[in-house]
Length: 320
Image 1: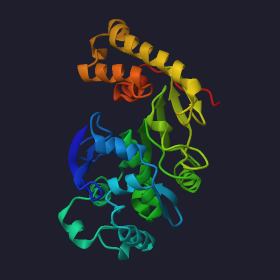
Image 2 (image 1 turned 90 degrees about the vertical axis):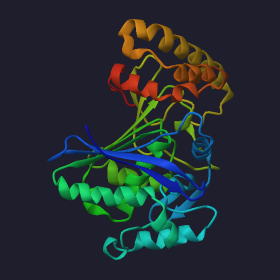
Image 3 (image 1 turned 120 degrees about the vertical axis):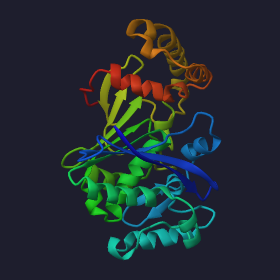
């Protein structure tokens, strides 16, 4: 891959550069692939975990209810200033030609002094697609990054950035939390799963994060598309929804604890000796797995599991 650039972007609600995204192409000239990768939840970053487990939402006209924390991470508003979301809604409904270089809901001074993820990525993609006219765009991320990949691709359609939206070759997310309600899901499925599916959501075993925010009558968050699910043996299945979809069932606690112990032993002791040195895990990864025994579902969220699922997993063949 040819590295293009990386951005450290501003989150007005958190008042830090909390959103990282990098872009790459398959080659330097005449590229056929443009990759947009959003950085996921950092293991010991409190802000990231708070964003993931947040249940706040904002209603966007013609799109549905959307997770506020993910809008903030893309630089599209701040819960500390509700006027930013009103401005965002107005700009989203304007034709792209009349809205200027940014659709951000932030005030002008913020827009000019801070990098906002939605704005800089969109502008850079316009430049790259002009240079590489035959290239397709692939948007990806793990955890928080997966949610941003999902939301960003939806916003390209919602804001009528049709030249970019039509170039999306695929959206690949790993351990992604839920982004919006059923209205958002219907919009997303219409744009990115029909008539040809371009949305691939991968979930590993008991991963906590894809099971939040909750899919219940109170929260109302839903997942779009079909899940590519891998169990702790890396056996793949196609599922409408994963087992224990809201994570809080007491009946799953004991099986998840047993599974977390098995993951710790299998991935740190057995896997490296079966498949080679490439599968030895770092001390941080091992510590994360130990933590997962105490808090079932946390260890399954490690990016290592998703790399292993792609490298070792059987192809999902069944839809349950």
